[in-house]
Every structure is written in C-alpha cells, then in structure tokens.
Image 1: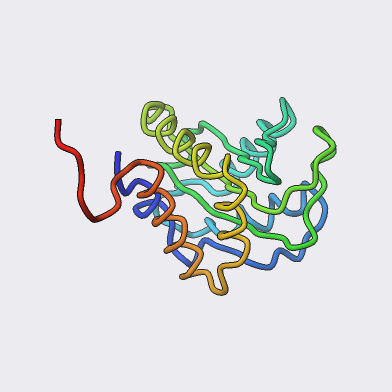
Image 2 (image 1 turned 45 degrees about the vertical axis):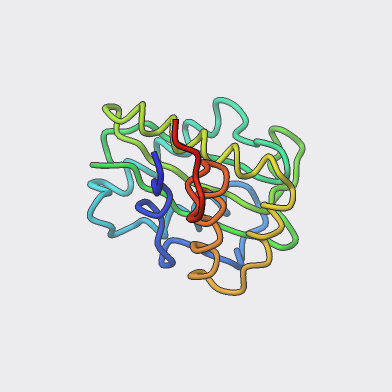
Length: 165
C-alpha cells in the first residue's frame, strides 16, 4: 500500500530531540505526542496498553530502532508517533541503545494494515543508510518527507520509469 506512512505521520507527532534517556520515560514522551488526537479515543487507556505490551517482550528491531506498539480499542484508526535521540535510549530488556522509536497504536480490526505498516518500516530500517537519513533530518517536516521518500523507494513507488507487467 503506497503512501501509508504519509497518511499516518505528520510533523506534530515527531520529536527529534527526546529529553528522556530512560526507556519508560521516552515511551511516555513519544506517546504524549498523540494525546488529544481525534484518532485516540482514550489516551490514558492507550498509554496503559502500550506500556503493558512493552513489558511482554522486546520491541527492538536492530539498527538502533524500536517499534513499541499496542493493539487497542482506544484508537479509532492506526496512529504513529516518532521519537529520535542522538545519545540513544537504553532498552534494558534487549540491552540495546535505541535512537529511533516508532510508537504505533492499532485498533484490533486493522491487523492487516498494521502488518503493512510494520513491514514497510522494517524494510526501511534494515538499511543503515536509511536510518542515518532519518537521524540527520534537520526538522520534523524533513523527517516525515525523508520517511515518505524511503517508503516510496522500498516499495518501488518512486516517480519515474516503472515496469508494467
């Protein structure tokens, strides 16, 4: 599904300089970017489920990226917020320092869309050069543009000549 990340993320939900260096505090800081969004019907319920899911198993993906997430009735559609930390945030459960944290909330009825989003993010972040491009984006708007461009590249939807089957 081309353009999925562009529909989910806007610059108001991107924190480029996380203040928090501890795992739990960083998740709170990033999740609070979603507080007040119309898609989040009960922020405190969403936050509680996000933190509960995080205690179950690591959400570290490698390449200094984590994807904390919750499947919850407290969001009307998929929501995403991103936090970036130059020094990194220690995720004690996996012993990794994480610099990019993508927080997702998904309604139970959107499992397929959720898997597409996660699959796209995984394809993007598996390349260290892509992670570096996200780490060096100078503004939240530039971060979103970079992420959308990387999505188009990994999905083969960038403008220009295409193969038709």
